[in-house]
Length: 153
Image 1 (tube, rainbow, N blue to C red):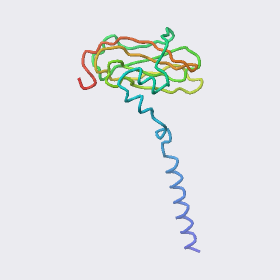
Image 2: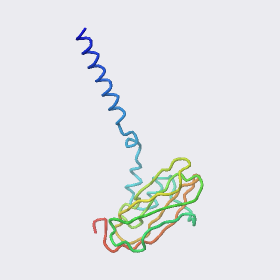
Image 3: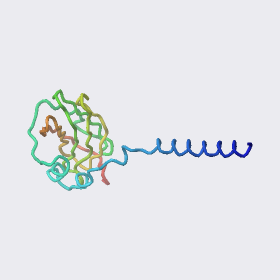
């Protein structure tokens, strides 16, 4: 009877350890990553790979908050907000970077059109926010002057 109890306890511990390990697997990390978009060297190529089109209409409904002059290109705070309905994603592009697509945020249904992050800019240029809403792309841009390079400069 003592051996049966030990076998039962060992089996139970093994099953619970496997169950816990299965819960710890980061499934979101295993999702598809748009590698081609992030490795594109030009903004139109990146948008084509990311959204299936490279044409975005300019919109006054998109607000970009960024410094006019960034003292350090390695840490440039950027905030993008929009009041558009049905916002699906917000992407941030630094046009003069070697790889211009900086970030792309997929938003869930009912989420506010708002993202805030810090980006790295190699040199002065436009920061473009691309918002996908209702299946269409919209954009806005803001010039940012970099005084100390962030991408190897």
